[in-house]
Image (cartoon, rainbow, N blue to C red; front, side, top):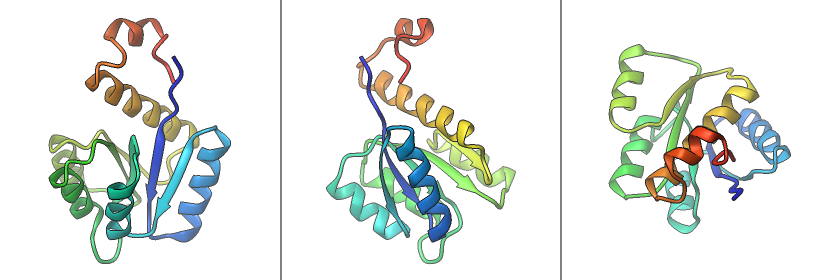
Length: 142
């Protein structure tokens, strides 16, 4: 069973967002993008995604505020935070509150792909679509 993650890239920096989307599509993934937290919430309300790659520093609604809304609205996604400005306490709080992972920009493409794969596997495990044994023997790899 091969399942490709549907990814929403949320970042206010046009160049970064477009480049990341292009690279993810080149890997065969389904990708859409949003330039703000509000735009992301609107896309999540009308489309199905598996993983959200979410910038933390955006004008208007921050990444942390966007993540809170994602949780409050009950969207079934795994969220990976991306930031160029790290705060250990902020990262720990977000991870404690349910963020899947927290990556520092510039993260390598391989690091992003590996994190997306692990996030997708967690979602599949939550839904019972794969079991732990599939994950351990590698047959659950995306």
